[in-house]
Image (tube, rainbow, N blue to C red; front, side, top):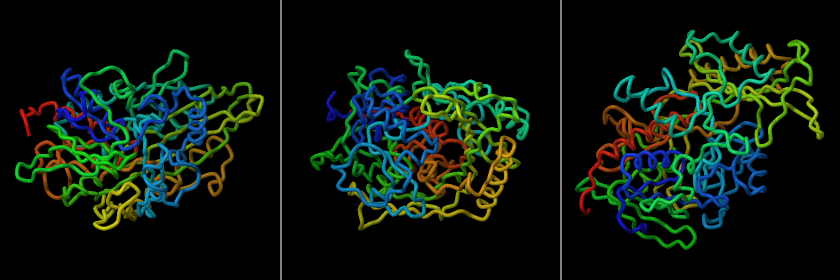
Length: 509
C-alpha cells in the first residue's frame, strides 16, 4: 500500500500507544488499511525495537550506560542540556531535553522527548505496575476497566514476576512488607515489579517495544500497513462544516517538502507534549488543551544493605547479569490516602573489575501524587516556533501545598525504609529530582465524561466535537497517577482502538 491510498486510519506517532492501536485494529479487521507516521528515524536496523535488545554493540553499550542509574531522567545524560539543537534535519535520532528542542521548559527542566521511530517505547524501563484506586478513570464500569486493563497488559506482554527475588532481594521485600501492610489484599502489598519483558532465546529478558507489540513496525510483512519515518505531521487537515479531520499535512524532515496525507480517521499518539501541540497548530483548541499537566513528584535514595545485620556474606550476593542494571526489581503499590506514594525499588550488586561482589545496593524511588490543576499547563505560542517549526511550548508547573505535604511524607518514608536496611544519610544519599525527571507527563489532552471545558476528549479518546479524531497515550490520563504511567496510558489506547474499529469508513471524503 502506498501512503497516498487513503488509509482507513492514520496513526500519528510510532511509540507504544500507536503500536497498541495498530495491533488492536489489525485484530479487529485483517484488511484495515493503516498508515503510521513519525517525525523521527529508526535507531539501528529495526524500527521500534527496544534498545535493550539491539544487535549493534555500540548502540547496546550506549543504551546500557544511560539506564544504569535506574532513573528515567538519566536517559538523556546526567546534566540537563539547555543549548538549543540545530535544525531538526540535523538531529541524530534519540532523546532530547525539551529545553534543547527549543521549548520553554524551565518549570520542568528534566522533561525530555524522544525523536526516533518507536518514540519512548524503545527507551522505557518496561516497568508495568497496574493502576488502582484514585489512579483509575471513567469507562463503562469496573468490569470494563478490568477488561481494558487485561487487554493492555496482554498487548504489552506483562510478566508479573520478571525478576524473582534473589536472597538479598527477598530480605528487602520482607522489610517492605513489614513496613507497608497495605489493605491486606495480595495485589496491593509489596511484591516483585511486573515488567513488559519475555525470555529471549539467548536467556536474556527482552523488553517490549513497539515492534514487539505490532511486528509490522519492525518490518514483518503486512500489505495493508505502512510506516513512514522522518515524516512530521505539522497540522491536521480539517473540515469545520462536517467536523471531520481529513488527514494531515506531512513534512519530509530531510527535504522540508510537505504533502497532504488523507485518511478516513486520525488518531494522534504523539506523547503528552506533541499531541496537544499538533492539535493547537491545527486550530483545534478546546479550553482544556494543554491544561492539567501532571507528573508525580520523584524522590530517590540509595542505601547499602547491612549484610552482617541480615546474616549475609559477600558470596551470597547475586551477580549482575549482562544487559541488566538490577538484580532485583520490586514494587511498593500505593494504598490510597493512608499511603499515597508508589515505590520502585531496583537493587544491584556492586562488583570489582574482576566481578567479585563488593556490596548490595538498594535503590529506592518513591513517586507521590500531584494534584490535577488547570494552572499546571502547557501553552503554545502563536508567533514563536521550536526546532521542528511547530508552535513553541511553554511549561507552567508548580507544586501545591498538598503536593509538598505528600513530598515531605515520602521523604520520611524513604528514610524509614532505608534505615531498616543499612546506614543512611538522607542529606547525601537521597534527593527530590527536578520536575520532568520521571518522563511520566500526563493530563494535557485529558479525557472526561462530559464536554464541560475540563477535558479534551471523551472516555474513548474522541476529541470533543469531532467525528473521527482521536487521541491516546499518557496525555489522556485525567487522574494523578503515582505508578509508572505506561500501562495506564495503554488503557487509553485500548479504548481508542475499540472506538476506531466501530467507525464505518465512507466511500470517499
